Length: 256
Figure 1 (cartoon, helix red, strand yellow):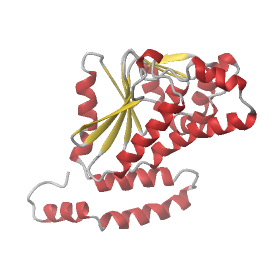
Figure 2 (spheres, rainbow, N blue to C red):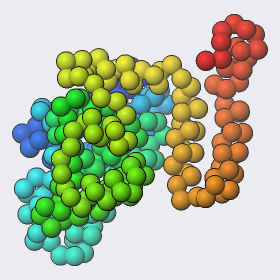
Figure 3 (cartoon, rainbow, N blue to C red):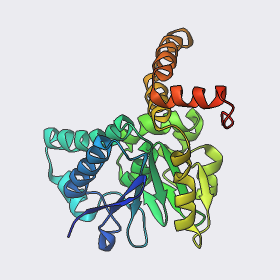
């Protein structure tokens, strides 16, 4: 059985984590399949967004018992390689040209919460549960911290990773971890409505915007102006921009 199922919905692709009997827990096979799915989506010239979601009752519960046993018995070098494998997945999401959106229902805990956090955007049901509970077993949500720190305030990040509590989607929205909260009853429709925004805006402009936003990480204000200037100039040269300006100048339709 495939651990990740890819399905196209016109302008976007859904990558469904497919280990429902294990609450879609992360293991080597699922991580590898998700990397392949993201790479294939990134190579497409037609897709405008990628949605990651879970099958069954949960989005992703983190590591399963088999993975935890592997961690407990591995050497430092083996654990280092295993941690790097997960880190590479999270980093890959930011390198995919188009937006990667986590659609969360049920539980997104530990590595599963990390996966959602690493995505560009998150839409979640009202009953969804999030959390980084690693400290409860003497572990550290270390890989996700680089992403979490960029999503929420320093004090919120400190609280989340050192107290290990679960929290609901409304709290996640309030602190900036979730972009939109929707009802369970309309989840499917709301996913489409949210993603469909990217069918109505310029694909080229979105790609450049994502590149610019993450390229600015670690730069001070003065340093961040230069890539903004470069991307501005590159955007002007795209066919989308030239076409949009032509339509505006011809008054055939509004600019936005």
